Image 1 (spheres, one colour):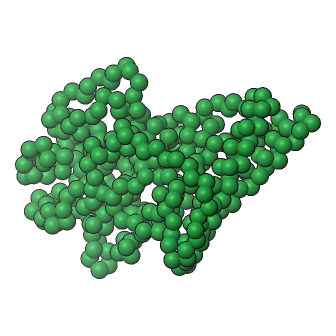
Image 2 (cartoon, rainbow, N blue to C red):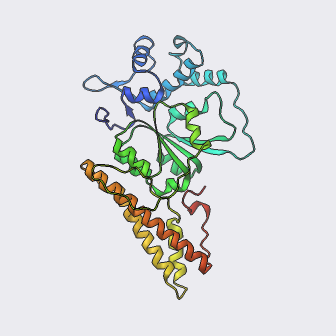
Image 3 (tube, one colour):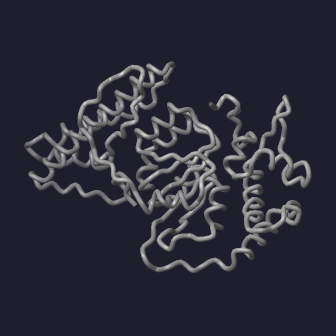
Length: 331
C-alpha cells in the first residue's frame, strides 16, 4: 500500500529511502542520531522526509561501508570527498571496450551511483547515461537497449509517463525499480511489457534483464473475462510507428487501391483506444479488470491488423522503411 507516502516532489519517507539505498531503517535512524549522516526534514507529525540529495549521499556512504570503510570515518565527509574516496577505493575507471555493448540508461541518481561503482560491470554493458527524471532523459535524445527507472513509489502519473511513445522509441526495454506500488499498477505495467523489480535489488540482478531477455510470443486468442481477475497477459507490441502509418496513408493516395489508407486508419483508431483504455480511472477492482480486458483485446486486434498491413506491403511492394528513430523500439 502507498497510503503512508505523501506525493511530495523529491521527498521520500524513511521506508522508501531504506529500499532505495539498501540501508535498514533502524540503521538509518542510528546513523542519523550518532553520526548526523543527513538531516531530513520533518512532517507535522514528526515523520522523516528525505530529499533526493539525501538519498544520493546515503547511497555513497552505504557503498563505502560495504567496501570496508567504518561509518565513523565517512559519515561526516562532504559529498565530494565521498565520491573521491569511492573512486580511490574502486581504482581507475576501466576503459570501455570497442566491441558492441548493451547501452543502459538509468533514471535515478542513487541507482546510477550503485551501478557505476559496482564491483564488476559485465564487459557487454555500457552505462550510456544517468538522469534525474524522465524529462531529462527525453530532452537528451538518448537511446539505449535498457532504460532503468528508479521510483520511491509507483502511482498513476508515473504509469502515464511510462506510456509516452517517445520512451518506446528511445529504449528497447524498460525496467522500473520501485519501493512501493499497488498491485493494480504493477499488473498494468506487466500488460504494457514493462518489467518491474522491487527494491532493494542487486545491480547484478538488474543486468540479467539484458543478458537473458525473455522472449514473449504473441497470443492472439480471445481472453476469458472475469470481473474479479485483473489479467496480466502482455499486450502485443506495436509493429508500426505513428510516423510509418502516416506515411502509408500518404502512399495510398497515389494508388488506385485504398487498402493501405484504410488499414492504417483502423490501426491508428485501435491504437488510440488501446492507450485510452490504460488511462481510464479505476474506481474498483471490477473497473480495473474490465479496462485490463479491453486493453489486451484491443491490442490483439491492432496486432492482427498490423500483420495484415505487413502482408499488403509485401504483396504490393510498397517502400515504407522509416528511419530507425521512427520505428517502435528503434535505437
